[in-house]
Image 1 (cartoon, rainbow, N blue to C red):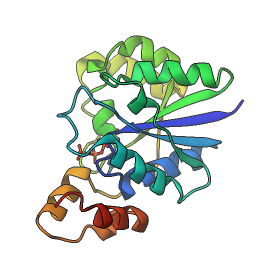
Image 2 (cartoon, rainbow, N blue to C red; image 1 turned 90 degrees about the vertical axis):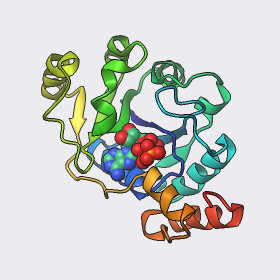
Image 3 (cartoon, protein in one colour; image 1 turned 45 degrees about the vertical axis):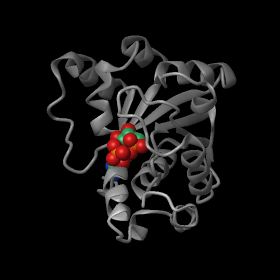
Image 4 (tube, rainbow, N blue to C red; image 1 turned 120 degrees about the vertical axis):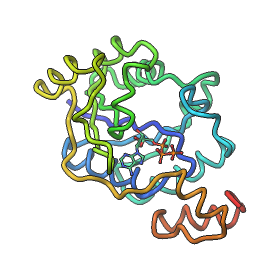
Length: 201
Ligand code: ATP
C-alpha cells in the first residue's frame, strides 16, 4: 500500500524547517509523495498577511527540491476555514487505498485536541511528528495524554528522529521586515521569489 504525506501549514513563507520535516517523513516512512498544502484560512491562527497565491507559488518552488514533493492548492480553492478534517476527507477519496500521514511539528500536535473533529480525524490518518526545538512532547495536555501514549505505541503517531532547524515563518518575516537576510532559512528559489515580489518588507 502506498503511503502519502499531507503537510498543511500557513507557509508564510515555507522554510527549511518545513522541508526538513517533509524529507524526514518521506525517508522514514517511505512516502511515495508529500503534498505541501498551504492553508486558505487557518482558523486557529491570525489571518495570514500574505495572499494565498504567493504562499502557493512559494510552496510550488520549494517542492522542486525533492522529486517526492508536490504542492497542492486543495485547501485554498476549497474556501472558508481550513480544517484538517476536511482536507483528509478529500485525500481519502483521491487515494482510497493509501495510508495517509499528516505531517506536523510538536507545537501543532500539542494543540490537536482543539482541532475541528479531532477524535474522528485521528481515526482517519496517521501522524508524522517532528519535535520542534524547545517544544518537547513530554507535557501533553490532559485531553491528549491517553490517546497520544497509545498512538505512539501502535504507530498512529510516528515521532521523527531529527529535530528540524529551529526556524519559524514569524522569525523570517521579522528578519525581512527589518531589512535583514533570511537566506539561510529558505530554499534559494523561495528567497528569490520573495525578493522579486517584494514580500515581507
Ligand atoms: P509561524 O511562525 O507563522 O507560526 P511556522 O514556522 O510555525 O509559522 P507553519 O506554516 O505555521 O510555520 O507550520 C506548519 C507546520 O510545520 C506546523 O505543524 C508546525 O508545527 C511545523 N513546523 C514549522 N516549522 C517547524 C520547525 N522549525 N520545526 C518543527 N516543526 C515546524
